[in-house]
View 1 (cartoon, rainbow, N blue to C red):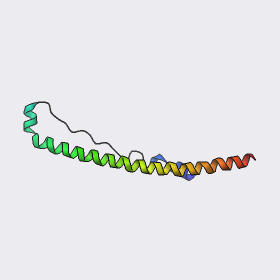
View 2 (cartoon, one colour):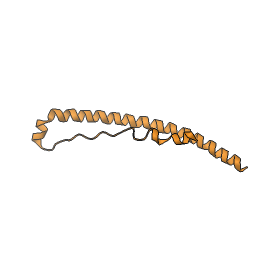
View 3 (tube, one colour):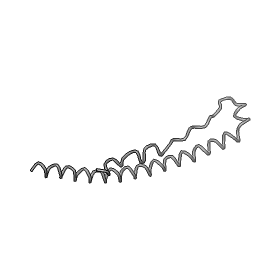
View 4 (cartoon, rainbow, N blue to C red):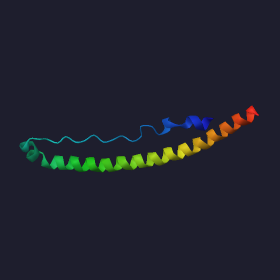
Length: 85
């Protein structure tokens, strides 16, 4: 039963989406901060890529965890069926 409780606490919340950068609408601000805006946007897109990789990894981990729990639960059901006989 320990495996059944191993669950979501181990992996929940490990992938945090990046905060989008501020993008001004005023042309003067765009011109004044062009370098910073470009740098922030490029960093954001790199962070988005890392976020998607993290989600993919987390999905694989949860899928494997679900496979293990499915096997454990099948054994529990088998045990309960055997007890009823």
